[in-house]
Amino acid sequence: MSPSEKPKTKRLRVVKTGQTAPAPDADPTPAAESSCPHCYGTGMEVLAREGARRCRCQSPNHRQSLFQAARIPARYQHCELQGYDAGDSDSKWVAKIEADRIINDYLVIDGRGLLFVGPVGVGKTHLAVALLRELIERYQVRGLFYQFGALLRRIQDSYNPVSQTSELAVLGPVFEADVLVLDELGASKPTDWVRDTMMQIINTRYNDKRLTIFTTNYSDKRKNEKDPTELLEDRIGVALRSRLYEMCKTVEIEGEDYRKRSLAQTV
Image (cartoon, rainbow, N blue to C red; front, top):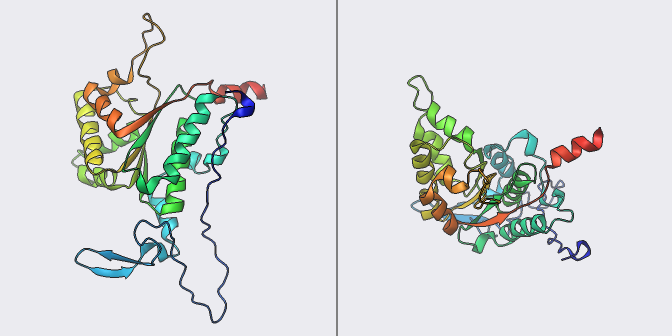
């Protein structure tokens, strides 16, 4: 595939949150979102043992609260799929198209996510966050971002007797998020506790068919027989890597570190 033949991603439909003031005789209630997974455009959702109520998508502050609850780091809050520069890289174009597919097919993909694999600086986190942001914007999902090591530290801190939180308080949102982005999978030292904790998270989300997007710097194969680089399987264990094959589509991204490239261009 030549650069001139690079496929282009579909133009993403962005649901605008800003609204003009209603006319004096107009109904001030915001229109229901046809893509809302809770009311499917009716404006009313039905809850077990509670009956029908006004859908959460009708709240003017609903999206804002969802974005705040997603814990997206400030450095990545600008990330959008259209802003991901795939350049002349076939693998980056494939990754961008796969992210677009998840966004467009979210309601019918049955929870199978993506595992972005590649060296540092190829835009894995950018793609994962862009995907999360668009799903929140378009479908009002409950999203959550965690860096792998930071999540483990929060869980460990919950064991401290003076901690104001508990393990369940930390893991509850991780289990229940409609969409979870887990960044830098395998970054922490692979102890038995780390593997057991990750297996608990992955199994729970797998069984509940909740969408999970992973990024990792660790590949599934070495460059050659003498390459001492650890594989993803070495970092997270055979059982967990096997589960991820079922849970996610692996998307390998190749390329140079854009941070180094940007620095070289400024020198």
